Image 1 (cartoon, rainbow, N blue to C red):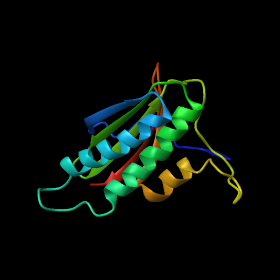
Image 2: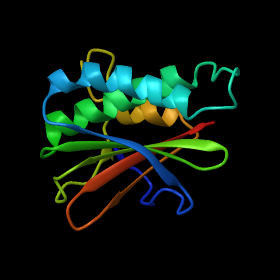
Image 3: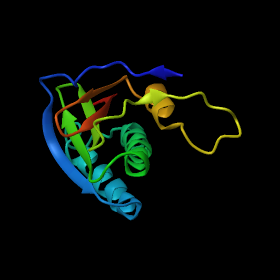
Amino acid sequence: MGQLRTSPPPPQATELEQWVLDSPEDLRGLRASLREALNRHGLVQGEHLDEVPHLVVLVATELASNALRHGRPPTIITLLATDDRFLLDVADHDVRSVPELSDIRPTDSGGRGLFLAQSVSLDVGWYATEKTKNIWASFSR
């Protein structure tokens, strides 16, 4: 087992959009809306973001599912951007727990969200505020 690096996202990141989830049923709407937002805020018109929206949506689904299952509601997903990166910030209201990378065995049915985020994103970190625990991941823009 291990812990994620404690670090807020880059301070120059600006918020693009935000979603609030109260239950797992909200994940379907998040996926569609997030994909649209990524394409809307992506590269210059006419260019494509290749696999970036797919990866961001995949990580958002995993992290939001974890937050809904293990955290305290509501779960807040924020899409931010810098000049060259998209940042996904997933917050829940359980400030007492610390995100940990747990040992995964092939027969486990869960626990892969943080590993997935680390494997497909440029960087992953977490931080806490007075009210929320946040996990973030960055992706090439």
